[in-house]
Amino acid sequence: MNASVSPDNASAPAVPVALRVAGVLSCSLGLAFGTAMIVSLDRLAKGRELPMTPFGFRAFAGGPFDELRPDTFKAMGWLLVATSVLDVAAGTWLWNGQRRGGRLALATSPVSLALSFGFALPFLMVGVPLRAALIAVGRRWLR
Image 1 (cartoon, one colour):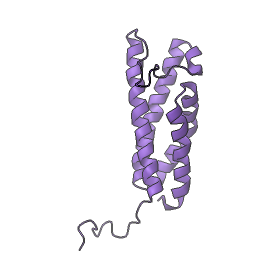
Image 2 (cartoon, rainbow, N blue to C red):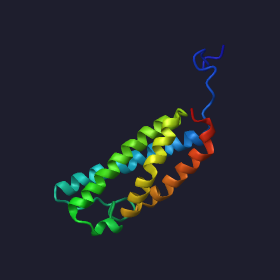
Image 3 (cartoon, rainbow, N blue to C red):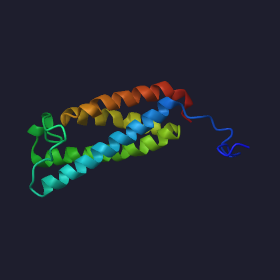
Image 4 (spheres, rainbow, N blue to C red):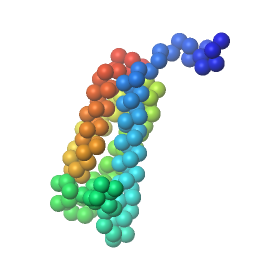
């Protein structure tokens, strides 16, 4: 008997690559932007500027949210952290082919996309629709 196939998972269908990629993308985006925003909010709480990115510009600066009052900007930042945590959970479930992962990822997509425009986050602007497309491709296999 093959060591990688046990009687418990022998009948379970394989998770399609589209859903695995959607899961990795969801976790990656959630971890990257959630962690970076926590660091940024900590710096703001200490009276410091937003951190510089490796690309030479300030993280989370340059978008329409720059015009918000500081308290509102921070609230939008915490909203991004919350959606990022949900995106990591959704990504884990997508990796396992669970329907709730697809539902959660699609539910957070409008909020994540709006925040990506507000904070001018091009990787999130591209990643969220790409994740949705991958979920659409693999939706028949969600269980």
